[in-house]
Image (cartoon, rainbow, N blue to C red):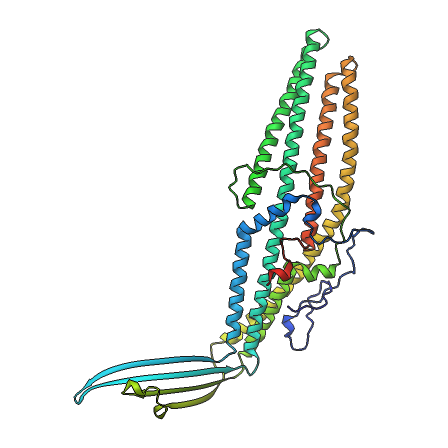
Length: 460
C-alpha cells in the first residue's frame, strides 16, 4: 500500500512521486499534531479496547457476531473476488501458451485420407509503456482496498455488538427501575387508602395515588417492550433467531479515564475507510495511466510449432515440425474516440476519488474529535446526575415523613417520587451513552480488539 505522510487540508492539489502517476497520489492535507479536544492527561492506549470494558461476555458476543453476520461474510467474499481480479490483471504481463490438436478424415476419388495435427502457440504482448504493469498495480490496490473494507466491516460489527449489549443492559436496568417505581407507588397507594379510611386523607388523594400508580404501570409495560426489542436486535446481530431469550445479567461498565487517542496522522494511517479510499484512489490513478498508454503503439511477439501428418505415429517426429516466429506493432488509428473517452473517464474517476478521500478523512477526524469531546461532557453529565439522584432520594425520604405526619400533600409525595425516578432513569441513560461514546471513539480511531486482527491481519 502506498503509505506516505498525509497532512490534512481542504486543498485537492495532487503531489507527484517518482514512478507513480500524479492521479494516484492522495491529496495533500494539513493536520495538527494532536486532537484539539484531547485532554492534558490520558491513559495509554489499550491493546484490546473490548477487554477494557471489563465484561467477559463481550469478547464471546463479538466472536459470535463476526462468525455469523452477513455483512462480514459479504466483505470476505468481496476480498476474495478482488484478489482474484488482481491475479487476473497481473497475468496479462506474462506470455500465453496454447496447445491444439486435431484429426480429420476425407474421402476422395483416389480413396480416403486421414490427417493428424498437433500445435503449440505462444503469444506475448510486450509491456513497452508499462500499461499492463499499471493495470496489475490497479488490481493489487483494489485488493488492498477490499482488505481494508473487511477490517472496517469487522470493526463496525464489533462496535455495533458492544453498543447493542450496552443498550440491552440499559433496557433491563430501566425495566427494573420501572418495576421498583410500581412497587413504591403501590405502597404509597396503600398508605393513602389507610389514611382515607381513618378520615385523614381525602378521596381525591386516593384517586391521585391511583393515577400515579397507573402511569408507572404504563411506563413499566413500555420498558418491558423496549427491553424485549433490544434483546431481539442483539440476537439478530449475532445471527440468532430473535426470540428474546438472550441472557443479559451484566452491568454497564465503570469507565476509566479517556485512553490516548493517538494523533490525526495515526488515525489517517490506520482507519480502514481512509486506507481503502487511498487504495482506490491509487488504483484509479494507475487505471487512468493505463488508459492513456492504450493510445500508444503496442508490440506483440508470437511463435509456434506445429505439424500435420497422415500417420498419428509421426506427430512427435521432429522431421515434420514446422516452427514460426512473428512480431507485430499495432497502433490505434480510429476507434470512434473510444480510447480517448476511456482515458477521460478514468481521469475523471480519479479526481472524483481524490475528493472522496478528502471527505472521508475529514469525516473521520470530525468523528474522533466529537467522541473525545463528548467523553468529557458525558462524564460531567453523569457526575451531575449522581448528585441529582442523591438529593432526590434524600428529598423523597423527607417528604414521606412529612406526609406521614400530615405536613406534606399527596402531590408533594408523588412529585418527590417522580423526581427520583427521573433522576435515576437519566443516570442510567447517561452511563449507557458515555459507554457507547467510548465505543464510538475506538471506532473512530480504528482501535485494535482481540477478534479483529487489525488491518494487517484482515489482509492476510
